[in-house]
Structure formats: C-alpha cells, structure tokens
Amino acid sequence: MQVDSASFVFIISLAAVVNGLGIVRWLTGFSEFVRRRPALQITHYWVFSLAAVFQFLLHVLFWWSLWSIRGSASINFLSYLYLLSGPILLFVGTAVLAPGPDGDNIDLRKHYFQVRTIYSTVLILAWLWAVFLACSPRRLCTNRCVLRSLHDSGGDTALGYKSDGPWRCGCHQLAIAGRVYRPTSTST
Image 1: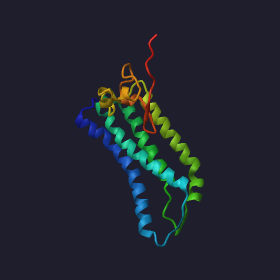
Image 2: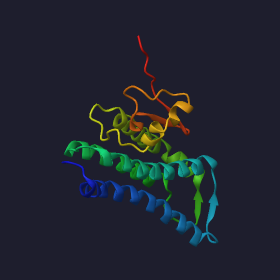
Image 3: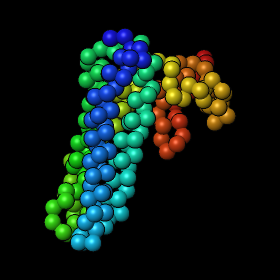
Image 4: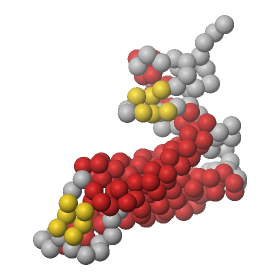
C-alpha cells in the first residue's frame, strides 16, 4: 500500500488506539487513586514510581515516533503487523505494571516484586522491537524523519557527529538519554 496523507491516517489509527489504551490505563488508575485517596493506604516504592513514569513516557515517545513513518513510500501487511506489535507490547507492560483498584491497601513494593519478571520481559521485548524496527533492512521510514531538520541545519555537526553517509536519516539512530548515537562514516 502506498503511503500518502490519507492512507497514513488509516494505517496509524489502530496503532494509535492501542497506544492510547495504555495511556488511558495509567490515567484511569491515577484518577482512581485521586478519587479514593482518603480511604486508601498506599505503601509507596520509588522503583515502582520510576518504572511507572518510564512506562508512561514510553507511550508518549511511541506516539511521537509514529509521525516518522509518514514519509514511507509503502507499507505491506507484515510490516503493519510488526508496527502494531510495539504498542501491543507497551499496553501489556502497562497492564502488568499498573496495580488494580482492589481493596483499600496497596503495597507498591510488593506489587512491583510480584510483576517485575513479567514486566521486565515485556520491556525487553519492546526494546528489541524498537531496535529491529530501526535496524531492519526494509525500514518503515525514509529520509523524511523528525530529526531531518537537525541534519539539514548542520546541528548534528555541532554535536560532534558527521552528517554524511548512510546515517543521515534520524530514524536509523539510537537516542539514549537525549544524545543521539550512531556510527560515523570512516573513509579508507
């Protein structure tokens, strides 16, 4: 299927809905916490809070990264299924990590240790999904990336990275902690 502006909306809608369900799961849990706060006894755990914020940010990051596939020339059904597996993994991670509204006593430390193995497995699968999406030979994106403007303006050379070579497209880079890491071209 050729990807134009009309088909882009159609292709992305299911992935956006599944991703949005994960965001709704967090917001529903938080609003339930606020509503029942006077009656709840919550034992907080900083690792759970950090994982919850991280998981929410992963949903937002996925939503933001959906924009980069708008420049694809085409997409087939298998690529689409692979694209859908990312938000599905994020939703499963959220559903596992978010505690249910059962009872009036919530021990986040106990809950975290009960679900950490499953959650970590789902998170690893989601990271592998993202790495394989970025490194696949048939990428879902072309050179019309979110970071393309950074490359065209020379901003990446100001960061100490080369702009030439096959790594001009921002979709083929790995962003960690706000820095963009990618191989630099070496001439022989």
